[in-house]
Length: 335
Image (tube, rainbow, N blue to C red; front, side, top):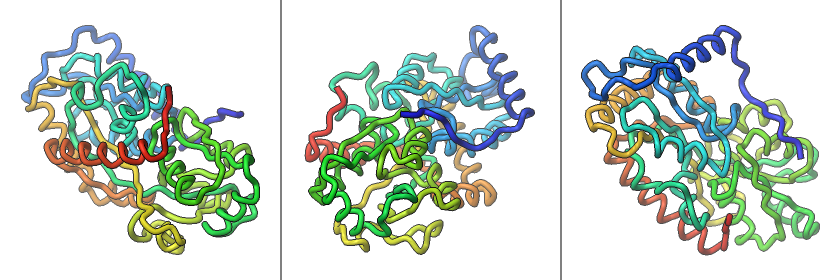
């Protein structure tokens, strides 16, 4: 299977600026002591645990550039893909708790503990929740070459081709993966899960016909839906998305009770000083509320949130309980 990456083009100037900032971060040696007064005094590394071009990367880059401007220091995105986001998350969990290494991750962060028998960190105890950045419904997409136009036709086609249907995801334990498992449970279709290291290579194979369907996050799927290379059959939210007003919800498409979504958040290592966490949240909230940033997210099908650290902590606990139930019902395991 191909692992070609697709994603937004970056200008040479942007790349050179990011490289220079990252070089400065890497050679800075010991970071300045953390504390909101005077923080930050050096570039901030933002680990995205997926490849460039995927939804986590797209969501992260929308906010990091503007947040860096607001904080007075660049936020340098560092893509560390692997093991369903655990490679990059483990790096942040072990980083100094000084506010100079942060994590942007999706809801998979609180799903992994229920799918993997072991992990190199504790998803709840090893991180300080800063804020939920956005909430995003998933969209059920098929390649334009597949002869189906709606969810019921897809179900009929899948049942007529047992053992020949593969659904992709951004990785084991992702909300994309578990939404596919939920679809399999509710329809009784025989489908095989194919995990990828991010949405970008999965979408490439979907468009190439190597896999037949995928529940994907809207920020990465929207450009291919707009170009006609992917066909959107339904969204997983309670109501239709303003980005795809003609696409029904899964419930409207005849799948009662089918509601899932993914979300993206910002974390710091555990024991990062609370005044630093509060400053990161305050500036993040301001950036997310800016009309230009909010409009950019909404064009991607994402709704800005900007919750407080305490609100975000409560939310991820509730989400973890929901996904744990789906994992148990589907029997999904990754190791």
